[in-house]
Length: 383
Image (cartoon, rainbow, N blue to C red):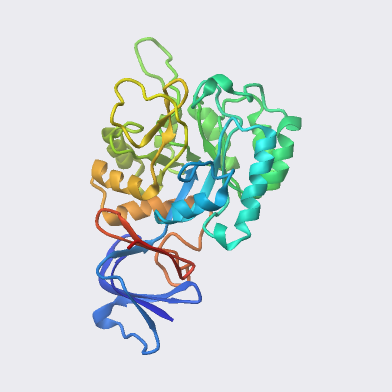
């Protein structure tokens, strides 16, 4: 048994200061305040030295590691995110990937997940291909603008549906319901996300009984329906805010460009911390930086100079969320560990609780990652 002492334990809704946490057989075996908890003599002792010890981060939406697509080279990407505290990673496929790329990418991820190097990869975040062709990066080159036809999508659905934890769709796309039903046939536990869309609330709500429960990068790449020139209509953002059963993903960059800080606070007020998920949406586009964005270091731009994901890691996104909204250390681990784990069906991680996986991260008050434990074993220590 291992005992982590002198820890500030980050629980789901409170802190335990000056605490001890026990690990046995890769799982959390117990915890408590040091002054009232006895430590067996044969324990291996790890001194947290006053750092926060919290559940490992769960990034359900990241396309890249340091400088390559996760599905192209999963091992270094998985390691890169692990060093930023991500103990569960869902590599995200791009919406415009071809059938061949999706088949090959699924095989790459599946093979690496079977090795120790891919231990923190928990499946795949399937972005597209049936998104609204009017939204998203590099939209001038979209090979999937025609209606969903089974003979087009069945090969990659058969090959990768079981890997997928989340599948992104635009509910307004023609024949999308049949696509949803086909994916569910191969993976009954799949979660769908409304993404790159200008769907009406009614179109979104019609798919909720089939598993639509997440909003991909909420308030980004969504349209607004204008019913009359004098007023704003309702669309994706309003439907997500209104429906308590839909989790809202948020990209929190340092300048509040993806989501304005005021909007972050508004979404937090409407959805509550129980229905927000922080994501990195990390990409590796290298388009020109448009005027007005000089000095911005954590965004990416496509060839047309439009925002195309971020250069964030989830630990930095947590820090930005604290800065923009006033969230506490407890709050950020709820939206970056517990919520994404529950939203994607991981019931064995995402919080400190007896019997769950010992996926833990040691951070300071600014969310700098010092140590990472995955399945009870140290995987990273920053000197």
